Image 1 (cartoon, helix red, strand yellow):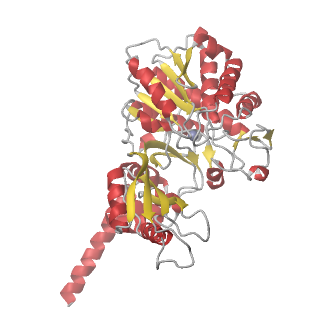
Image 2 (cartoon, helix red, strand yellow):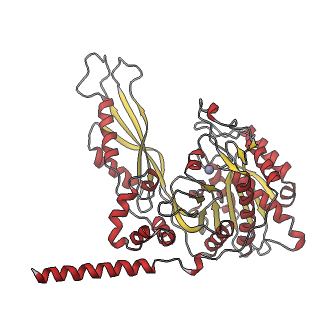
Image 3 (cartoon, helix red, strand yellow):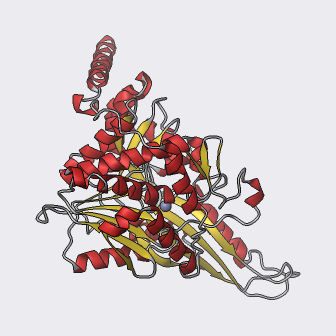
Length: 489
Ligand SMILES: [Zn+2]
Protein backbone atom coordinates (compact mmCIF):
# COMPACT_ATOMS: atom_id res chain seq x y z
CA UNK A 1 0.00 0.00 0.00
CA UNK A 2 2.79 2.34 0.98
CA UNK A 3 4.67 1.51 -2.26
CA UNK A 4 1.61 2.37 -4.32
CA UNK A 5 1.26 5.69 -2.48
CA UNK A 6 4.94 6.50 -3.08
CA UNK A 7 4.62 5.59 -6.78
CA UNK A 8 1.50 7.74 -7.15
CA UNK A 9 3.23 10.63 -5.35
CA UNK A 10 6.25 10.35 -7.67
CA UNK A 11 3.97 10.28 -10.71
CA UNK A 12 2.14 13.37 -9.51
CA UNK A 13 5.46 15.15 -8.93
CA UNK A 14 6.64 14.31 -12.47
CA UNK A 15 3.33 15.57 -13.83
CA UNK A 16 3.62 18.86 -11.93
CA UNK A 17 7.22 19.33 -13.11
CA UNK A 18 6.32 18.62 -16.77
CA UNK A 19 3.32 20.98 -16.66
CA UNK A 20 5.39 23.70 -14.95
CA UNK A 21 8.35 23.43 -17.34
CA UNK A 22 6.09 23.47 -20.38
CA UNK A 23 4.26 26.53 -19.01
CA UNK A 24 7.52 28.37 -18.26
CA UNK A 25 8.76 27.66 -21.79
CA UNK A 26 5.44 28.78 -23.29
CA UNK A 27 6.50 32.41 -23.81
CA UNK A 28 6.48 34.66 -26.88
CA UNK A 29 9.42 34.20 -29.26
CA UNK A 30 11.52 37.35 -29.93
CA UNK A 31 10.26 37.61 -33.53
CA UNK A 32 6.76 38.09 -32.13
CA UNK A 33 7.59 41.41 -30.60
CA UNK A 34 8.97 43.70 -33.28
CA UNK A 35 7.00 46.08 -35.46
CA UNK A 36 7.95 48.66 -38.08
CA UNK A 37 7.34 51.84 -36.10
CA UNK A 38 4.37 54.18 -36.31
CA UNK A 39 2.41 54.27 -39.54
CA UNK A 40 2.12 57.52 -41.53
CA UNK A 41 -0.85 59.66 -40.49
CA UNK A 42 -3.60 60.57 -42.93
CA UNK A 43 -6.16 63.32 -43.07
CA UNK A 44 -9.01 61.69 -41.18
CA UNK A 45 -11.91 63.86 -42.30
CA UNK A 46 -11.20 63.72 -46.04
CA UNK A 47 -10.82 59.93 -45.87
CA UNK A 48 -14.08 59.65 -43.90
CA UNK A 49 -15.91 61.75 -46.48
CA UNK A 50 -14.69 59.51 -49.30
CA UNK A 51 -15.88 56.34 -47.54
CA UNK A 52 -19.21 57.95 -46.61
CA UNK A 53 -19.84 58.79 -50.28
CA UNK A 54 -19.43 55.12 -51.24
CA UNK A 55 -21.79 54.00 -48.45
CA UNK A 56 -24.47 56.33 -49.84
CA UNK A 57 -24.60 54.23 -53.05
CA UNK A 58 -26.69 51.17 -52.02
CA UNK A 59 -25.00 48.33 -53.92
CA UNK A 60 -27.19 45.72 -52.22
CA UNK A 61 -27.01 42.04 -53.21
CA UNK A 62 -30.30 40.15 -52.79
CA UNK A 63 -30.33 36.38 -52.51
CA UNK A 64 -32.12 35.44 -55.71
CA UNK A 65 -31.47 38.28 -58.09
CA UNK A 66 -28.70 39.49 -60.34
CA UNK A 67 -26.24 42.13 -59.05
CA UNK A 68 -27.73 45.62 -58.88
CA UNK A 69 -25.98 46.82 -62.01
CA UNK A 70 -27.12 50.45 -61.89
CA UNK A 71 -25.91 50.94 -58.33
CA UNK A 72 -22.63 49.14 -59.04
CA UNK A 73 -22.05 51.31 -62.13
CA UNK A 74 -22.75 54.41 -60.03
CA UNK A 75 -20.17 53.19 -57.51
CA UNK A 76 -17.61 52.67 -60.32
CA UNK A 77 -18.19 56.25 -61.50
CA UNK A 78 -17.86 57.55 -57.95
CA UNK A 79 -14.56 55.74 -57.44
CA UNK A 80 -13.23 57.11 -60.75
CA UNK A 81 -14.06 60.63 -59.55
CA UNK A 82 -12.52 60.24 -56.09
CA UNK A 83 -9.36 58.43 -57.22
CA UNK A 84 -8.26 60.19 -60.42
CA UNK A 85 -4.54 59.19 -60.23
CA UNK A 86 -5.32 55.52 -59.83
CA UNK A 87 -7.78 55.60 -62.72
CA UNK A 88 -5.49 57.51 -65.06
CA UNK A 89 -2.30 55.55 -64.31
CA UNK A 90 -3.35 51.96 -63.48
CA UNK A 91 -4.90 49.64 -66.03
CA UNK A 92 -8.49 49.14 -64.89
CA UNK A 93 -11.25 47.05 -66.36
CA UNK A 94 -14.76 45.86 -65.72
CA UNK A 95 -14.75 42.06 -65.53
CA UNK A 96 -17.88 39.90 -65.86
CA UNK A 97 -20.97 41.71 -64.66
CA UNK A 98 -19.64 44.59 -62.58
CA UNK A 99 -16.39 43.43 -60.99
CA UNK A 100 -13.43 45.80 -61.01
CA UNK A 101 -9.84 44.78 -61.65
CA UNK A 102 -6.94 47.23 -61.36
CA UNK A 103 -3.41 46.34 -62.47
CA UNK A 104 -0.43 48.29 -61.19
CA UNK A 105 2.50 46.90 -63.15
CA UNK A 106 5.60 46.14 -61.09
CA UNK A 107 9.15 46.93 -62.20
CA UNK A 108 10.19 43.25 -62.09
CA UNK A 109 7.72 41.18 -64.10
CA UNK A 110 9.61 37.97 -63.27
CA UNK A 111 8.27 38.22 -59.68
CA UNK A 112 4.91 36.71 -58.75
CA UNK A 113 2.30 39.46 -58.22
CA UNK A 114 0.14 40.22 -55.18
CA UNK A 115 -3.67 40.42 -55.17
CA UNK A 116 -5.51 42.71 -52.75
CA UNK A 117 -9.19 41.74 -52.60
CA UNK A 118 -12.41 43.32 -51.45
CA UNK A 119 -16.04 43.47 -52.57
CA UNK A 120 -18.36 46.18 -53.87
CA UNK A 121 -21.71 44.74 -52.74
CA UNK A 122 -23.36 44.85 -49.32
CA UNK A 123 -26.08 42.83 -47.59
CA UNK A 124 -29.64 44.22 -47.39
CA UNK A 125 -31.02 45.83 -44.27
CA UNK A 126 -33.50 43.50 -42.55
CA UNK A 127 -36.98 44.93 -43.36
CA UNK A 128 -38.50 46.50 -40.26
CA UNK A 129 -35.12 47.11 -38.61
CA UNK A 130 -34.46 50.46 -40.37
CA UNK A 131 -35.85 52.47 -37.48
CA UNK A 132 -33.46 50.77 -35.06
CA UNK A 133 -30.53 52.44 -36.81
CA UNK A 134 -29.18 55.57 -35.06
CA UNK A 135 -28.40 56.92 -38.56
CA UNK A 136 -30.21 55.71 -41.67
CA UNK A 137 -28.47 52.62 -43.15
CA UNK A 138 -27.36 54.34 -46.36
CA UNK A 139 -26.98 57.86 -44.94
CA UNK A 140 -23.19 57.71 -44.75
CA UNK A 141 -23.53 60.12 -41.83
CA UNK A 142 -20.32 61.10 -40.08
CA UNK A 143 -21.24 61.69 -36.44
CA UNK A 144 -19.89 61.05 -32.94
CA UNK A 145 -16.53 60.00 -34.34
CA UNK A 146 -17.98 57.28 -36.60
CA UNK A 147 -18.85 56.78 -40.26
CA UNK A 148 -22.29 55.12 -40.24
CA UNK A 149 -23.95 52.81 -42.71
CA UNK A 150 -24.12 49.47 -44.47
CA UNK A 151 -20.71 48.63 -45.88
CA UNK A 152 -18.73 50.68 -43.36
CA UNK A 153 -17.30 47.41 -41.97
CA UNK A 154 -18.21 44.93 -44.70
CA UNK A 155 -16.60 45.74 -47.03
CA UNK A 156 -16.51 49.17 -48.61
CA UNK A 157 -13.94 49.89 -45.93
CA UNK A 158 -11.70 47.43 -47.82
CA UNK A 159 -12.35 48.85 -51.30
CA UNK A 160 -11.88 52.46 -50.28
CA UNK A 161 -8.85 51.92 -48.05
CA UNK A 162 -7.05 49.98 -50.80
CA UNK A 163 -7.77 52.68 -53.37
CA UNK A 164 -6.70 55.43 -50.93
CA UNK A 165 -3.46 53.51 -50.37
CA UNK A 166 -2.71 53.10 -54.08
CA UNK A 167 -3.67 56.71 -54.79
CA UNK A 168 -1.21 57.85 -52.09
CA UNK A 169 1.56 55.46 -53.22
CA UNK A 170 1.02 56.36 -56.87
CA UNK A 171 1.77 59.98 -55.97
CA UNK A 172 5.19 58.80 -54.72
CA UNK A 173 6.18 57.25 -58.06
CA UNK A 174 7.79 60.55 -59.09
CA UNK A 175 10.00 60.16 -56.00
CA UNK A 176 11.10 56.74 -57.16
CA UNK A 177 8.72 54.56 -55.12
CA UNK A 178 7.71 51.81 -57.55
CA UNK A 179 6.21 48.43 -56.74
CA UNK A 180 8.61 45.65 -57.70
CA UNK A 181 5.84 43.08 -57.87
CA UNK A 182 2.71 43.78 -59.88
CA UNK A 183 -0.21 44.71 -57.64
CA UNK A 184 -3.76 43.71 -58.54
CA UNK A 185 -6.81 45.21 -56.84
CA UNK A 186 -9.69 42.75 -57.28
CA UNK A 187 -13.14 43.99 -56.26
CA UNK A 188 -16.00 41.50 -56.68
CA UNK A 189 -19.62 42.53 -57.25
CA UNK A 190 -21.48 39.62 -55.57
CA UNK A 191 -19.48 38.33 -52.59
CA UNK A 192 -22.53 38.44 -50.35
CA UNK A 193 -24.55 36.01 -52.47
CA UNK A 194 -22.66 33.84 -54.90
CA UNK A 195 -18.97 34.62 -55.31
CA UNK A 196 -19.11 34.34 -59.12
CA UNK A 197 -17.36 37.70 -59.31
CA UNK A 198 -14.26 36.28 -57.62
CA UNK A 199 -14.17 33.28 -59.97
CA UNK A 200 -14.63 35.59 -63.01
CA UNK A 201 -11.65 37.65 -61.89
CA UNK A 202 -9.55 34.52 -61.27
CA UNK A 203 -10.44 33.21 -64.75
CA UNK A 204 -9.18 36.45 -66.34
CA UNK A 205 -5.95 36.38 -64.32
CA UNK A 206 -5.36 32.69 -65.08
CA UNK A 207 -5.86 33.33 -68.80
CA UNK A 208 -3.01 35.86 -68.52
CA UNK A 209 -0.71 33.34 -66.83
CA UNK A 210 -0.84 35.09 -63.45
CA UNK A 211 0.35 33.10 -60.39
CA UNK A 212 -0.01 35.33 -57.30
CA UNK A 213 2.44 34.87 -54.45
CA UNK A 214 -0.29 36.05 -52.09
CA UNK A 215 -3.94 37.11 -52.06
CA UNK A 216 -5.29 39.18 -49.18
CA UNK A 217 -8.97 39.53 -48.33
CA UNK A 218 -11.27 40.49 -45.44
CA UNK A 219 -12.29 37.85 -42.88
CA UNK A 220 -10.33 38.59 -39.74
CA UNK A 221 -9.42 41.70 -37.74
CA UNK A 222 -7.95 43.12 -34.55
CA UNK A 223 -10.34 41.86 -31.88
CA UNK A 224 -10.74 43.15 -28.33
CA UNK A 225 -12.53 41.27 -25.57
CA UNK A 226 -13.34 38.40 -27.93
CA UNK A 227 -10.54 35.92 -27.17
CA UNK A 228 -10.83 34.51 -23.64
CA UNK A 229 -7.71 34.64 -21.45
CA UNK A 230 -6.42 38.06 -22.52
CA UNK A 231 -7.61 41.65 -22.32
CA UNK A 232 -5.10 42.79 -24.94
CA UNK A 233 -6.06 43.42 -28.57
CA UNK A 234 -5.41 40.37 -30.75
CA UNK A 235 -4.56 40.75 -34.43
CA UNK A 236 -5.83 37.58 -36.06
CA UNK A 237 -4.57 36.71 -39.52
CA UNK A 238 -6.95 34.23 -41.14
CA UNK A 239 -4.85 31.42 -42.65
CA UNK A 240 -7.74 29.10 -43.47
CA UNK A 241 -11.48 29.22 -43.79
CA UNK A 242 -14.26 26.83 -42.84
CA UNK A 243 -16.18 24.98 -45.53
CA UNK A 244 -19.89 25.29 -46.20
CA UNK A 245 -22.63 22.71 -46.78
CA UNK A 246 -26.39 22.93 -46.57
CA UNK A 247 -28.27 19.67 -46.19
CA UNK A 248 -31.94 19.34 -47.10
CA UNK A 249 -34.19 17.01 -45.08
CA UNK A 250 -37.50 16.05 -46.67
CA UNK A 251 -40.36 13.98 -45.27
CA UNK A 252 -43.37 12.96 -47.40
CA UNK A 253 -46.73 13.10 -45.58
CA UNK A 254 -50.23 11.88 -46.32
CA UNK A 255 -51.98 15.25 -46.54
CA UNK A 256 -55.66 15.46 -45.63
CA UNK A 257 -57.66 17.09 -42.87
CA UNK A 258 -55.89 17.87 -39.58
CA UNK A 259 -58.88 16.71 -37.53
CA UNK A 260 -57.75 13.05 -37.81
CA UNK A 261 -53.94 13.18 -37.78
CA UNK A 262 -51.60 10.17 -37.63
CA UNK A 263 -49.52 9.75 -34.45
CA UNK A 264 -46.75 11.77 -36.05
CA UNK A 265 -47.12 14.09 -39.05
CA UNK A 266 -44.39 14.85 -41.59
CA UNK A 267 -43.62 17.98 -39.55
CA UNK A 268 -43.28 15.90 -36.38
CA UNK A 269 -40.89 13.45 -38.06
CA UNK A 270 -38.86 16.34 -39.44
CA UNK A 271 -38.76 18.09 -36.05
CA UNK A 272 -37.47 14.88 -34.45
CA UNK A 273 -34.70 14.61 -37.06
CA UNK A 274 -33.66 18.23 -36.48
CA UNK A 275 -33.69 17.75 -32.72
CA UNK A 276 -31.42 14.71 -33.10
CA UNK A 277 -28.95 16.72 -35.16
CA UNK A 278 -28.86 19.56 -32.64
CA UNK A 279 -28.39 17.27 -29.67
CA UNK A 280 -25.65 15.27 -31.46
CA UNK A 281 -23.18 17.89 -32.73
CA UNK A 282 -20.16 16.85 -34.76
CA UNK A 283 -17.09 16.11 -32.69
CA UNK A 284 -14.82 18.84 -31.31
CA UNK A 285 -11.25 19.02 -32.63
CA UNK A 286 -8.35 21.43 -32.90
CA UNK A 287 -7.56 22.18 -36.55
CA UNK A 288 -4.14 23.54 -37.62
CA UNK A 289 -5.35 27.18 -37.72
CA UNK A 290 -6.82 27.20 -34.20
CA UNK A 291 -3.91 25.17 -32.81
CA UNK A 292 -1.47 27.69 -34.35
CA UNK A 293 -3.51 30.54 -32.87
CA UNK A 294 -3.30 28.95 -29.41
CA UNK A 295 0.42 28.43 -29.82
CA UNK A 296 1.02 32.08 -30.76
CA UNK A 297 -1.66 33.94 -28.79
CA UNK A 298 -1.74 31.56 -25.81
CA UNK A 299 1.82 32.52 -24.87
CA UNK A 300 0.60 35.99 -23.88
CA UNK A 301 -2.52 34.95 -22.01
CA UNK A 302 -3.17 34.95 -18.25
CA UNK A 303 -1.36 32.22 -16.29
CA UNK A 304 -4.31 29.80 -15.99
CA UNK A 305 -4.83 29.88 -19.77
CA UNK A 306 -1.09 29.51 -20.38
CA UNK A 307 -0.94 26.42 -18.16
CA UNK A 308 -3.85 24.88 -20.07
CA UNK A 309 -2.58 25.75 -23.56
CA UNK A 310 1.05 24.80 -22.88
CA UNK A 311 -0.14 21.34 -21.84
CA UNK A 312 -2.75 20.41 -24.42
CA UNK A 313 -1.47 16.81 -24.30
CA UNK A 314 -3.12 16.73 -20.87
CA UNK A 315 -5.77 19.45 -20.98
CA UNK A 316 -7.19 19.08 -24.50
CA UNK A 317 -10.55 17.53 -23.42
CA UNK A 318 -10.96 20.28 -20.79
CA UNK A 319 -10.10 23.07 -23.25
CA UNK A 320 -12.47 21.69 -25.91
CA UNK A 321 -15.26 21.29 -23.39
CA UNK A 322 -14.84 24.88 -22.17
CA UNK A 323 -14.78 26.20 -25.74
CA UNK A 324 -17.96 24.28 -26.58
CA UNK A 325 -19.90 26.46 -24.14
CA UNK A 326 -19.93 29.70 -26.16
CA UNK A 327 -21.15 29.93 -29.78
CA UNK A 328 -18.06 31.90 -30.90
CA UNK A 329 -15.45 29.54 -29.47
CA UNK A 330 -17.56 26.47 -30.25
CA UNK A 331 -17.52 27.47 -33.94
CA UNK A 332 -13.71 27.42 -33.86
CA UNK A 333 -13.48 23.78 -32.76
CA UNK A 334 -16.09 21.87 -34.68
CA UNK A 335 -18.28 21.67 -37.76
CA UNK A 336 -21.34 23.59 -36.59
CA UNK A 337 -24.96 22.50 -37.09
CA UNK A 338 -27.55 25.24 -37.77
CA UNK A 339 -31.12 24.37 -38.81
CA UNK A 340 -32.12 27.52 -40.70
CA UNK A 341 -35.14 26.82 -42.95
CA UNK A 342 -38.30 24.83 -42.21
CA UNK A 343 -41.51 24.43 -44.22
CA UNK A 344 -44.61 22.33 -43.71
CA UNK A 345 -48.23 22.79 -44.63
CA UNK A 346 -49.50 26.12 -45.96
CA UNK A 347 -52.56 26.09 -43.71
CA UNK A 348 -53.20 25.29 -40.05
CA UNK A 349 -55.98 22.75 -40.72
CA UNK A 350 -54.25 20.86 -43.55
CA UNK A 351 -51.83 18.01 -42.88
CA UNK A 352 -48.50 18.49 -44.68
CA UNK A 353 -47.98 16.51 -47.89
CA UNK A 354 -44.33 17.35 -47.60
CA UNK A 355 -42.20 18.87 -44.87
CA UNK A 356 -38.76 20.25 -45.66
CA UNK A 357 -35.89 21.73 -43.68
CA UNK A 358 -32.41 22.98 -44.45
CA UNK A 359 -29.59 22.57 -41.99
CA UNK A 360 -26.47 24.64 -42.59
CA UNK A 361 -23.07 23.22 -41.63
CA UNK A 362 -19.78 25.17 -41.44
CA UNK A 363 -17.07 22.60 -41.91
CA UNK A 364 -13.86 22.62 -39.91
CA UNK A 365 -10.58 21.84 -41.76
CA UNK A 366 -9.89 18.12 -41.62
CA UNK A 367 -13.52 17.26 -42.45
CA UNK A 368 -15.35 17.28 -45.79
CA UNK A 369 -18.92 17.79 -47.07
CA UNK A 370 -19.16 13.99 -47.53
CA UNK A 371 -18.31 13.43 -43.85
CA UNK A 372 -21.08 15.88 -42.95
CA UNK A 373 -23.62 14.02 -45.10
CA UNK A 374 -22.60 10.69 -43.54
CA UNK A 375 -22.98 12.19 -40.06
CA UNK A 376 -26.49 13.46 -40.88
CA UNK A 377 -27.55 10.03 -42.19
CA UNK A 378 -26.17 8.25 -39.12
CA UNK A 379 -27.75 10.60 -36.60
CA UNK A 380 -31.16 10.98 -38.26
CA UNK A 381 -31.35 7.23 -38.95
CA UNK A 382 -34.96 7.42 -40.15
CA UNK A 383 -36.02 5.97 -43.50
CA UNK A 384 -38.86 8.51 -43.75
CA UNK A 385 -36.36 11.38 -43.98
CA UNK A 386 -34.72 11.91 -47.38
CA UNK A 387 -31.30 13.55 -47.04
CA UNK A 388 -29.34 15.40 -49.76
CA UNK A 389 -27.13 18.45 -50.25
CA UNK A 390 -28.98 21.68 -51.01
CA UNK A 391 -26.80 23.56 -53.50
CA UNK A 392 -23.10 22.89 -53.98
CA UNK A 393 -21.06 22.38 -50.82
CA UNK A 394 -17.59 23.93 -50.44
CA UNK A 395 -14.83 22.08 -48.58
CA UNK A 396 -12.69 23.97 -46.03
CA UNK A 397 -9.79 25.92 -47.54
CA UNK A 398 -6.20 24.69 -47.21
CA UNK A 399 -4.14 26.42 -44.50
CA UNK A 400 -1.62 29.04 -45.67
CA UNK A 401 1.90 29.28 -44.29
CA UNK A 402 2.63 31.11 -41.03
CA UNK A 403 6.30 31.57 -41.96
CA UNK A 404 6.04 32.98 -45.50
CA UNK A 405 7.52 36.48 -46.09
CA UNK A 406 3.97 37.74 -46.81
CA UNK A 407 2.65 36.45 -43.46
CA UNK A 408 5.58 38.04 -41.61
CA UNK A 409 5.00 41.38 -43.37
CA UNK A 410 1.30 41.35 -42.41
CA UNK A 411 2.17 40.49 -38.79
CA UNK A 412 4.79 43.24 -38.65
CA UNK A 413 2.38 45.82 -40.08
CA UNK A 414 -0.29 44.86 -37.54
CA UNK A 415 2.25 45.48 -34.75
CA UNK A 416 3.00 48.89 -36.22
CA UNK A 417 -0.72 49.66 -36.21
CA UNK A 418 -1.36 48.24 -32.75
CA UNK A 419 1.91 47.96 -30.79
CA UNK A 420 0.13 46.36 -27.85
CA UNK A 421 -1.51 43.65 -29.97
CA UNK A 422 -0.81 39.95 -29.81
CA UNK A 423 -0.60 38.75 -33.41
CA UNK A 424 -1.36 35.23 -34.51
CA UNK A 425 -2.92 33.02 -37.18
CA UNK A 426 -6.54 31.95 -37.04
CA UNK A 427 -9.29 29.94 -38.67
CA UNK A 428 -11.94 32.17 -40.32
CA UNK A 429 -15.41 31.00 -39.32
CA UNK A 430 -17.46 32.61 -42.07
CA UNK A 431 -17.17 32.26 -45.85
CA UNK A 432 -15.31 34.91 -47.87
CA UNK A 433 -14.44 35.24 -51.55
CA UNK A 434 -10.88 34.18 -50.77
CA UNK A 435 -12.01 30.54 -50.59
CA UNK A 436 -11.87 30.63 -54.41
CA UNK A 437 -8.20 31.67 -54.29
CA UNK A 438 -7.09 28.48 -52.51
CA UNK A 439 -5.77 26.66 -55.57
CA UNK A 440 -4.72 29.88 -57.30
CA UNK A 441 -2.57 32.04 -55.01
CA UNK A 442 0.36 30.43 -53.19
CA UNK A 443 -0.83 31.82 -49.85
CA UNK A 444 -4.16 33.40 -48.93
CA UNK A 445 -4.56 35.59 -45.85
CA UNK A 446 -7.65 37.22 -44.44
CA UNK A 447 -7.20 40.39 -42.45
CA UNK A 448 -8.80 43.83 -42.32
CA UNK A 449 -7.13 46.28 -39.93
CA UNK A 450 -10.31 47.38 -38.17
CA UNK A 451 -10.60 46.95 -34.38
CA UNK A 452 -13.65 44.91 -33.41
CA UNK A 453 -15.18 44.32 -29.96
CA UNK A 454 -18.02 41.92 -29.15
CA UNK A 455 -20.65 44.62 -29.93
CA UNK A 456 -19.05 45.37 -33.30
CA UNK A 457 -19.28 41.73 -34.38
CA UNK A 458 -23.09 42.05 -34.21
CA UNK A 459 -23.01 45.17 -36.40
CA UNK A 460 -21.53 43.25 -39.35
CA UNK A 461 -24.58 42.29 -41.47
CA UNK A 462 -26.59 43.76 -38.53
CA UNK A 463 -27.93 47.06 -37.26
CA UNK A 464 -25.88 50.25 -36.76
CA UNK A 465 -22.89 49.14 -38.82
CA UNK A 466 -20.20 51.79 -38.37
CA UNK A 467 -16.45 52.36 -38.32
CA UNK A 468 -14.50 54.90 -36.24
CA UNK A 469 -13.22 57.88 -38.26
CA UNK A 470 -9.78 57.54 -36.73
CA UNK A 471 -9.81 53.74 -37.03
CA UNK A 472 -10.58 54.09 -40.72
CA UNK A 473 -7.67 56.50 -41.22
CA UNK A 474 -5.41 53.95 -39.52
CA UNK A 475 -6.81 51.28 -41.82
CA UNK A 476 -5.73 53.37 -44.83
CA UNK A 477 -2.27 53.88 -43.33
CA UNK A 478 -2.03 50.12 -42.76
CA UNK A 479 -2.99 49.30 -46.36
CA UNK A 480 -0.47 51.85 -47.66
CA UNK A 481 2.35 50.31 -45.65
CA UNK A 482 1.23 46.76 -46.48
CA UNK A 483 1.03 47.28 -50.24
CA UNK A 484 4.39 49.05 -50.24
CA UNK A 485 6.11 46.26 -48.31
CA UNK A 486 4.40 43.30 -50.01
CA UNK A 487 5.09 44.66 -53.48
CA UNK A 488 8.72 45.42 -52.59
CA UNK A 489 9.57 41.94 -51.21
ZN1 LIG B 1 -17.68 40.86 -46.77
